[in-house]
Image 1: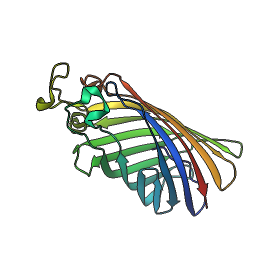
Image 2 (image 1 turned 180 degrees about the vertical axis):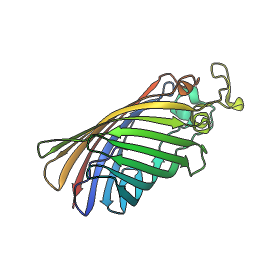
Image 3 (image 1 turned 135 degrees about the vertical axis):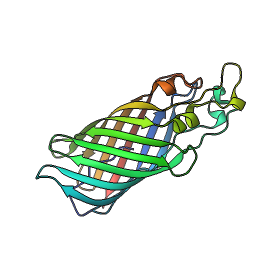
Length: 238
């Protein structure tokens, strides 16, 4: 999940609530909207927001305007479905979300921040791996508004695609042939906006659209080649 820009102070602690609404690519599946608690913790050693965690490792200053940051990351991925989520999934085994862990490298520059992540499914549900490359930049508008557009590419291996979008031989039926997923690349674009009323109160909005790989779009259980997600939240900072 996207994160608010960190206030420049030794430690940040925030509590709040958010609403997230997402549309998955599966055929006839309803839009999912849920309320979630928010915890934002950020200091020189540790970062947590939403469902993402980073343990910060020592970085490297390249110049006055460039720096390399390294971290160990973890996150919860809410991908997957239950058989009763859609008629086309009837008779399919449940595909569970997973806990993912890996490493991150960030290159901060005066123009743009570049990120590279490698993660794998440590919960063992999909046994998959992902490599994500992303770029973002933040603009301050006055004293209250921060806008951060972003663009990214995410490579999924064949195990990930096959687990979440494949159809096993025993699950095949008329109109739902067996399908073995292969590795592919998704393209993501998004925008994050934060409005800080004062040092203690902030609201945040995030929107993201994802163009799914051809390997996902070719699955007999999907009907669209894009997914989207909206997030609106409020946090109180101590």
